[in-house]
Length: 93
Image 1 (spheres, rainbow, N blue to C red):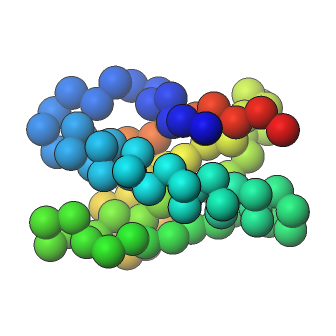
Image 2 (cartoon, helix red, strand yellow):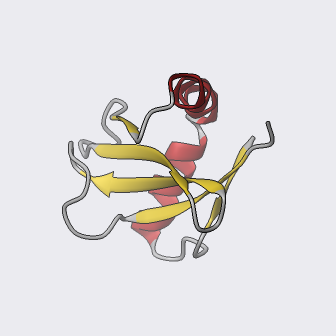
């Protein structure tokens, strides 16, 4: 499994966050399987901070595109404003 970012991270902060989250791909894959198995509406987790800053990942199913999406939010929360970066999980059942 891999993350296909909707917009290629370009700014330094986007690149750092993308690399950090991509380093958590095993956790994301395990959580995606729980998300699917339990039929959840959304699932979020916050890994240990990156350089003192927290980022929260939210996994959900994008019904229109029929793909799993990952939003990465700044801080320990989801849904406030726009995500820092987001993309699709390249996962095949």
